[in-house]
Length: 333
Image 1 (cartoon, rainbow, N blue to C red):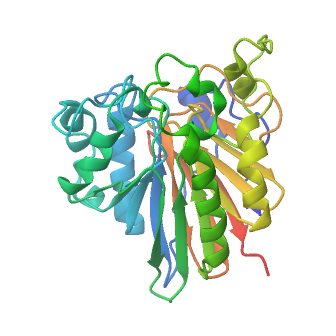
Image 2: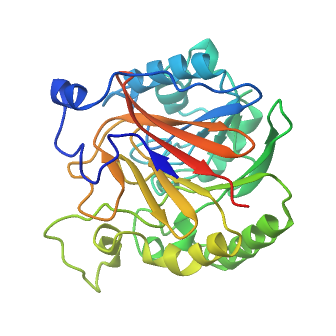
């Protein structure tokens, strides 16, 4: 795994506008390579175009054209603040159809659910798959496989992380939607374990809304037994996922986990897995890495992933088109 020169811990925190641009090397194209397959990943976006969502969409369209992106993955929190009410909710038009309307983005969108989606009608997001030619959410968790022109196969495993985190069963905003999910959490984990073991793809990528590991540590926040959700911001990750999901990732030597939830662009390497946060599809946070991340940027943006037989390339791009960082992940022997 290698980085560009700007991937130093905390290098981009607090930089913005011209200050950020001046700190970076000249933008360069990230070549897809003959026979490769490319896709985009974005999360935490649905705000009717606000908070640079529309700007991110414009740059996603440009990258999709440049790389001939096969598909897009969304890592959840698709509609703020409270998901959607039905398949006819105006949010579909205002936050999705009319924002990501460029021809290069009329490709399949493989979607994960986030905690804000659980504040609304989750079944409506699943049902919208039958109405939209590009929205793909067949169930709360699922997998799909793609093949590059050179024959390289990549399988992506889409998880539903909100039901795996105990906090949300007590959160008034999500607990009703999760009433029947607690018993399914072990089923989901068993499915992932078995599916990863069965897969013969050259690359296995897992994605979910919440981070497993993160360098996102909020200063001044104390742990509270009464509100363990704050552990997400103080322990450098999500304790429930570290305990329940990470052992599966390690057992199957998963090279890449894509997530959102943290409203930034970030990279953490732990064990054999590169954890890539692409939770900056619109509104960003107010703090970034406090130690633990290899790279973190408070910039609205997304990532572009290029798949080759021996390497995955993850390129972070912001809402102005600047390439913030590049991470190359070599396939394990």
